[in-house]
Amino acid sequence: GEIPPNPSELLMNPAFNELLEQVGPRYDIVIIDTPPVLAVTDAAVIGHQVGTCLMVVRFGLNQQREIALAKQRLEQNGVEVKGAIFNGVMKRSGGHYAYTYYEYLPSQQTGTHKAYR
Image (cartoon, rainbow, N blue to C red; front, top):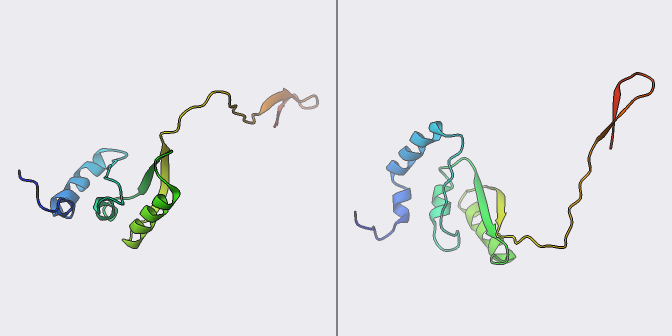
């Protein structure tokens, strides 16, 4: 078909909501990828029809003030941002990763095991 003068209006069409209602029960998670929040209103429109809104932020591209403005724009439209996905991070060599672990040692008195951190 023809591209409408305002494509965001397609998202407000009852057919889009019906599509979400049809696919929702079939899958554990339905991911809807929208254009950037600051470029068009699609994310704000769709945000009212989904269960959770996560922002995708690219390392080295999105500035903190842009992220804050995008979050503010969504919230002004009644969409709660529940988290973020931080992508595009380059793995660097030379760094290190540390974590704690549990070690199980036999107990002398009871014959059971104790966990030490």
